[in-house]
Length: 358
Image (cartoon, rainbow, N blue to C red; front, side, top):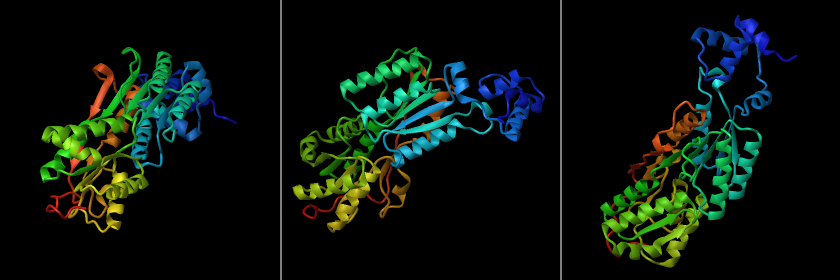
């Protein structure tokens, strides 16, 4: 038979109202009293009636975390950090249940998951990863999020641009400085002496792709405007997978235009690029420098170690959890931009002498 809240109260020597305050979180309860209640919950194996609490409070302990691809290290790290921060030690009833929703990059799936989470009266929603920049989808997404926020559901956009919703609604945005990171990476290659720089961008129509490509081209323009035309034929769009990087590098080699460096949309793509170059007998970085983006865990273990741009994924996950639970108030303007950092490793170096490029 299920343990009741009254039994927990009797075991802890407190009133049922005190137990309720501890379990619901956000209410002042003396530390010793909170500890007794949490111990009683643990010893008796009490399980709160989530659906009943959701009906009573018009919300639930469920936080939906929407990702593009949970198998991608980028989203795995972000979601893992967020989930851990949703259940911090010592918060008792303040813990939340994270439900990861994998869209596989489908805009319609993103909207469908939001509908399901709204039906479950989710206590919060975090949307991660780049936004699909298609007007019809943007309009539908803004309307859906605005409706949930108007009903009191906190929403956090993590790694994507802010939406045009009223400032009074509980919608916060955590952005990465993708533009600045891509700018510094291109500037690094230019400082080394590279002028024939290939760029393997992400899929078109995605905010992350746009920001990183814009930062890259801004650095070229600042260094020498003529480089924009010179490097344009060396720029192509691809997916974010290793195979996409591999195919992109083979296409660059097929085109026959000389290049001494390749900047990739992310670290996974960079690994694919390096594999294709290696198969063609091209040395890294002696013949061609290769750089990635994100600083995923494997980037330091590649041979040679990958020059990349660190995106603070773990920090973003913690911040998103704090914002969606109200443990941290949103800043003025409700937008936080986290800095990125250039990490120079062994995969980039000075270009080879003229005539020895691939």
